[in-house]
Image (cartoon, rainbow, N blue to C red; front, side, top):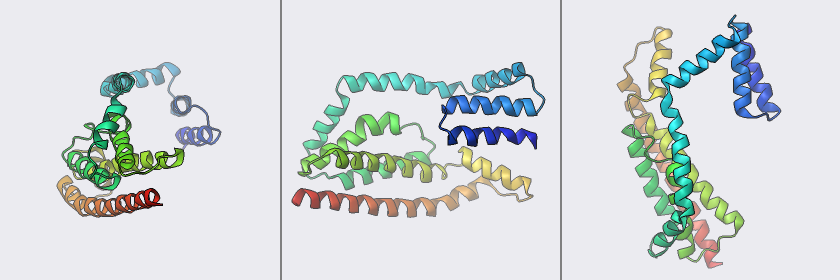
Length: 222
């Protein structure tokens, strides 16, 4: 039971708003100490995990690239491009992106888009441009609403689409957990049952997007 002290460290650390990385490291050392590991062994475990998951560091390569293209005017170009299409509004634009995100996630292509890769530099500016093309005045609050809806669209598409992919971590986790309880189930069955949930999530969020689009048009007409 002492090994659960690491969970207490995480709860307390987040409650007092310490640096998340520092909290996780502290929790790891406390858990290791409770399990009878030396500090060197805990560091070795960190190193082993990092070495086996080197792909995680790819994010550090993506961020500078996104920063460079943003500085070169990617957001402005995306906003200008979508502004040329007068018939495009925020709702339909984000619905198309939601469909794209769900379909690609269902095929296991979860990293093909995301908050850093597509939402911040491309999709959110395009949504803002679509709103402005419809005559919506984007004050600070409205602009943040548009950006938040774009970010939420990516989250919904990814979360409910990835469970359809048979080899995703969440599916394998559920299969393993059920196996420990003596329940044997094929991963394909969980993936198939994730399809109705994804469809319902798509319909609900698409309706939210269209209602949001209608609210924006009302602001423009007011």
